[in-house]
Image (cartoon, rainbow, N blue to C red; front, side, top):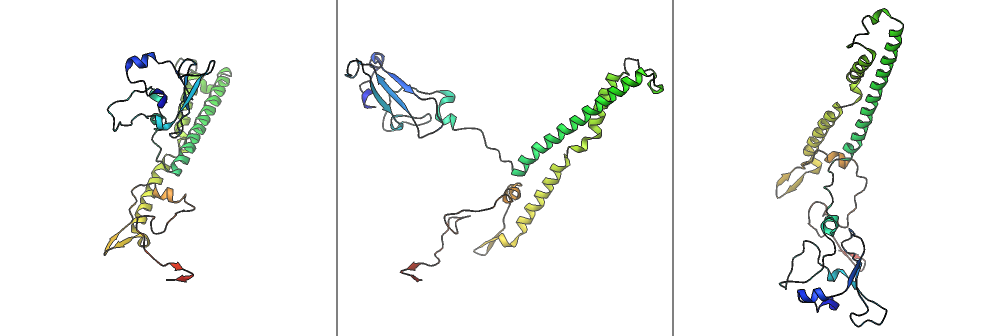
Length: 248
């Protein structure tokens, strides 16, 4: 910035007196609201006042930029590490799962929670009944007072048995079935003669490079395009034009 161009050496930077007011780190690459504030004895400011000079993007070098047309610069680091704009905008790798997969996973977790609830209920019923039967000296409770055969231990065994017995609540085979359906749909896309491309006598069939392509296509309701004949390749063919109401 012009107000700091006189700082051309380490000694000049050491003698400089100013402060920088900046907003918190922001992900917006095109927004920067900072200001250099000089005290009243600097830059010829009136008594009791401070000079404020805004800092814009044209005065800022973002992390990762390269210097050109100059060998060196003197600057002040405003944000470092995770507060830099390039890090704030990096983010995580977006998920490439289809909509069907994103809907299936919560449903499987819900079924797993239901299975756990059923197993817990079976354990509680078994523990309650065995305690009652033990107090009644039921004939099938012979040797029930032994350490390896008691209501607490039997309730735990019942819990695990219930997990195995009712495991079909969780549709693990559903994932295998969906993968088989996706494979068949990818084959149908490849065999479809209506969507093949013929150019210079060479026929190119549509290849599904992602097994979730059919899932994504099923979610499309509208296709918006600002041009025609450019959805798959950048080729524009002249059809006709209208000049003064005359179509040619």
